[in-house]
Length: 207
Image 1 (cartoon, rainbow, N blue to C red):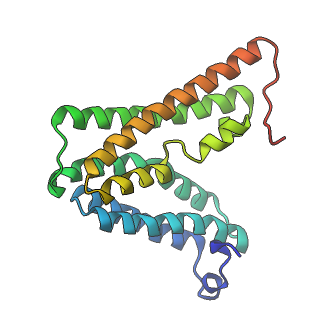
Image 2: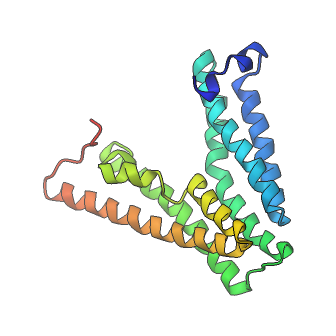
């Protein structure tokens, strides 16, 4: 039984939108905690948010209560919050006692913001051009989806940095991994375009 299929939620009359609302509040709390350098609190709060982020969609499907509002709300939060988390984490390194110098701070922020937006655009371009998501093209792409620079893998990097009391290393690691992931996605887009130009078919390995 999946987390979102738990009968306790249905018995209590909790709706998917209420779960999304609770998650949204926790997402904001985590952002504030990161900003002030309360990284362990932010990580714990963020973890609960991430669980709720999984639960709301499953609950909606289980109870057949999915709505356009709920779907837009859930996906909107998913899309918007990661850059704010990373920015807050970088800022929180100062009150924590591991400040980034100005040049490093803006290099990290610029790399993360540009890389995040560019990867979303690459994914959209792949869908428009080839009619499927880039992460279902070949086995490599599905595997890379598990570790590409998105929220969950980046949280692992930040956690590792915090364990050794170097949250500054963690956010620099996130920026580096974002840049690497961007290059991988860009190369895969160009490879697909080159194959199509040679008359090759672009189909999902899952088909």
